Length: 100
Ligand SMILES: [Zn+2]
Image 1 (cartoon, rainbow, N blue to C red):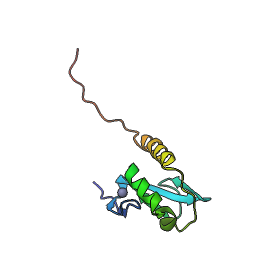
Image 2 (cartoon, rainbow, N blue to C red):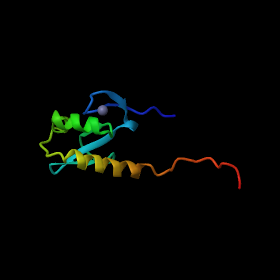
Image 3 (cartoon, rainbow, N blue to C red):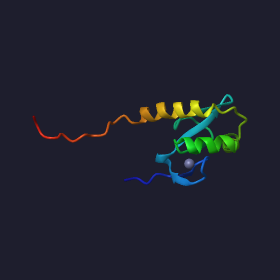
Image 4 (cartoon, helix red, strand yellow):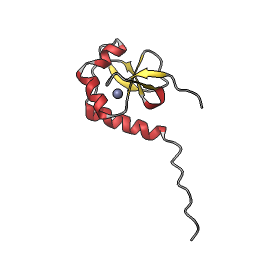
């Protein structure tokens, strides 16, 4: 198992493995969640509490060194949920429970 690099969440400020965080970059004044996008990235737990904290403390603009208008919390939650679903491309394996 390869250790995942540690990043700080811009919401709660706690350090966590990259695999547990989502990466955002600033693109044309808005926030884009992508692990592939080039440029300075900010990492955050995909949970509402951290999104709210980041929003309140203007952490996005600071972390990304860009003046941007972050989307609303609702939008962020939605975007992250969609994004998350995309990442889960291997569905949980449900063990076969015997044959009928
Ligand atoms: Zn966090």
